[in-house]
Amino acid sequence: MAEGRTPPLVDPRAFMGVSSYGFPISEPIVTTIDRHVPAPVEPLPDAWWSDTATFMRDVEQLIMSEVADAYRTASQAEFVSRPDWQNYVRMLTPPSCARCAILAGRIYRDLEAFQRHPGCDCVMIPVQNWEQAHDEGLAASFQQAFEDGNVRGLSKADARAIRDGADPTRVVNAYRGTGVPGVTTAYRTDLFGRTVKATHDAATKRSAWRKANPTRLVRLRPESIYEFASDHDDAVRLLRLYGYIT
Image (tube, rainbow, N blue to C red; front, side):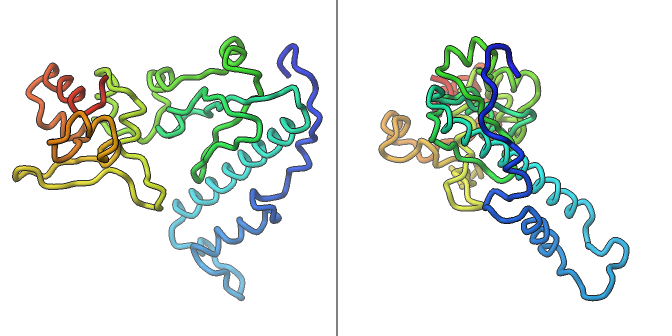
């Protein structure tokens, strides 16, 4: 326990053995197994699943996700039981995906749960404000995680754009999901006879970028920007033109 912190009021053991949906933890484990192959009535032969690597990956992801959910649920119960704690800071468990990394160090109100993707292992630490989070070394940053090689899911062009000064949030958002499973804002299209990678993010008619560039047909992603750029200076110019550098 950190020096100066009061003992917890919530017993974390109360959250053991229960899934994030409130069922016994055995239920999602059995569901994960049945997704690969229904359990036969007769005794199971050796290696009865068809793809060992995929099976073990799914089971490991489930276990890690449930452990993280149990921690977060216990933490939220602790926040509610202590009215003197008003906020919490979002912390990474590196390595982390790019979407989580750009939210590192964000302050939330005690009952404001942050959105998580399957397998998200971000944690919440109670703080009064950002100043306390900073003083206690809890205000992690995307840039630090990026420099340490702890950000997953970035393409080579994404990482290059960030190193060239692009805003990480704008780079990541150019590929984020739209809320529909499997659908993102990124897409391929033909532009003057060439196939380019573009994004719908920040490209709608109400967006600041679109208002500043009403005649541009698409908003290019970093991959196409570096493909078209003649040199480094030209790449930086295009990153600024397409709204990745302010």
